Length: 356
Image 1: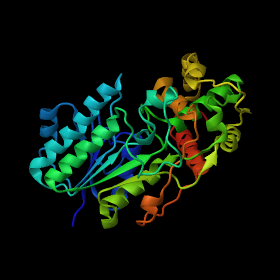
Image 2: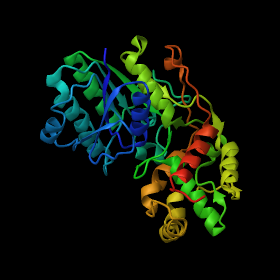
Image 3: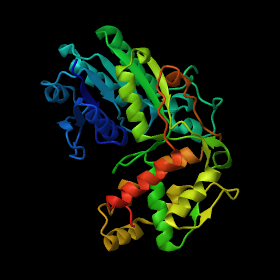
């Protein structure tokens, strides 16, 4: 049976990698975004505003996807607004597709805030769950837009008869320009500025993160899990953590990343030193680097998302996940985290996003 995918958020880190994965396996693939980019050969663009139900219905009028992948969200000022806006975008997509009766599976990408709570909850040292994080852990008694999005998927699945899967990655490592949460590129830009200015590549986060165990999620491996879950009977109606499959300590990895760029590494020295403050005066420096090196993106803020990197690296506990739920159901992919970073850095250089 033909597989027709609609990727919602196709221009993001996850969506663009998922498009490549599906196309490589013969799927007919449509990519929905407000402003689609021709980055992925073979991806058929769909332009629509997810918060405009009428326009969305018109944009999807001629499509009858069998599989829907929801890989985007819209950041708002408060969690109340996050809930209102991000539940609406899920609801609007599924309502627009409902008359076709073509959808067999819907996959929703959320993340570890399912276990940690909204940004402000763990950033302010609220109650934190035991690690490793497991899918069986109950929802927190906190407002959380991930829960609202899940509930929209569950309700539509019950109503319309499709299966679902929920995917909870840790920090995504992959290429995307203009992305709100982009640690790999943020660290690459920071290291490039350190090399330019002679500053040390200084650890910005907490002692717990520096010494504790951690993991991350390569954009390519979540793409593989999304395709697997969409076509595997044992994966129907399940939530899955998704990480590379290895664990590391930043105290081990940080000097290796510094060495790749040829800069001096500086570890945790007893003080949290947020990267957002560190980079706040570097916009002009980056523009100078971009002009001299003929880079394609001179705007530091379109490459670096220091605020999110600070939240990840500043957590007051180690954060790592358990992968048993997908492993026991047959998903056995693995990705070296060290290679995830190096592969990304090489790609950023090849695409003239960071200097050589």
